[in-house]
Length: 431
Image (cartoon, one colour):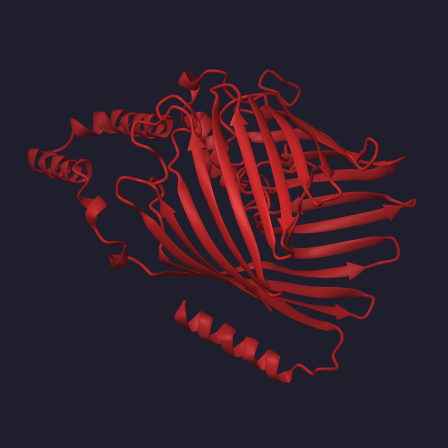
């Protein structure tokens, strides 16, 4: 890894040195972000990390462009994957059940162990169950550095089409907090503005009429069966934009999580009702194909949709409201299980329950400040996530943010109540 970082640094330096000021086709930029977070937990967990992003694109006349984004993560003290869950929460129940099922699965093997082997296994289990490893300092394993090529693609411009090869950003749908039709990204509802990770794919756009296009995308996997592909038809009607899409999703990640192949059709729209009031929505009908199912069977089909509005007042206040229905979710918190948790982490759905409502308000003041409040309510178990944020534009290239994730609800019976509150301080410098 160190050798790779050195090579990339030398290459980047060489490019910068050899770039001529008059080269109007080459554009370089990016940002550096440092973040500190405090989790309001019994152990008072704190985390610290930094992110460096270098963005470069080169316009090849009017024939195309080359673009690459390099991400460098530095985690000084990251959080344990399970430290964000409260003790006794629904997440604890899910994880405990998973470990119990795992132990039950290996119990037949225990009968074949020798007394010495069984004694060794019991000692290992005692060490883990005692929480011994909870007290080992993170500094024993960190800091940790990760280098990622987030985007790296070549784009060709033709008379009535564009062709993109490589790792690129793909974002479908018109929802702000939720995007049922977007199979390409896993989205955090409490951070709708977070950057989307690049997708390795071939992306072909055909343009026709004044505002219409036909998009074909194929994202390869380890073999022909494990891949995503589909199309999207987009056009306009009056003051509205709309699209129809169809995809087949069976990625390597889904296979690893045990998620079945999925066929999905969807549609979305956005526009104005009147007087600047925005109206948007999207819906998806998915049909997972479990082992042994015929292509025409629809017994496991489910629907997801979201709809909402937004409006900006003359004083700059921006408000948004959005409702989300998750046909794959559960009405009762007792039914939150490992399957639902896997679907959530795999990006198949954006919540454990069926019904959600979100609200966003943002207000700029004193020229350099912006106050934002995001609220997300699980209306089935009546838990809530509240994310207040204060942003200060210290300079046109430097932003300072202070935000918090506040979770309300029963810690043992609700989705959001089982999460740990945190507060974060972030400084971002753009160049």
